[in-house]
Image (cartoon, rainbow, N blue to C red; front, side, top):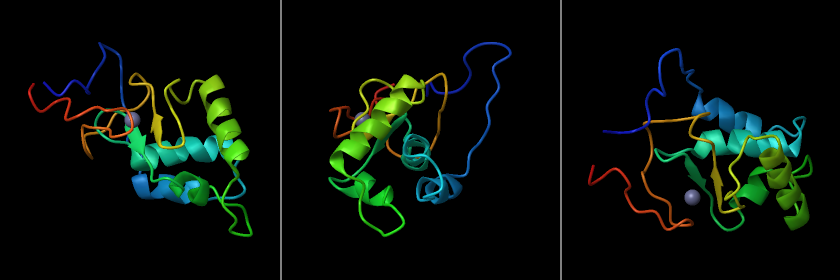
Length: 124
Ligand SMILES: [Zn+2]
């Protein structure tokens, strides 16, 4: 039981292109909180976590001059995305998590180093 398909009758899913989400995450015309959201979709794994390296997200969200997003800019962007219901409360610069009722994928790992989750579906 994979646990990531269907949440009752009348619930339908879209598919998003991960590579297009990466492109949008890098688009400096888009507000930072929305770029964070696209970054989460780009990196999303089977348990709806999106892990990033230490400076990776700040670099991904660089401005037009290529300068990585500041620490405060990054935490503001993540906080705003949470306020808009796009990210879960346990999201951080090292791992963005999406609400399971909002997004799901069959790609990627089923674990998260940042949140200490190991292969959730392996024993299922
Ligand atoms: Zn995580």
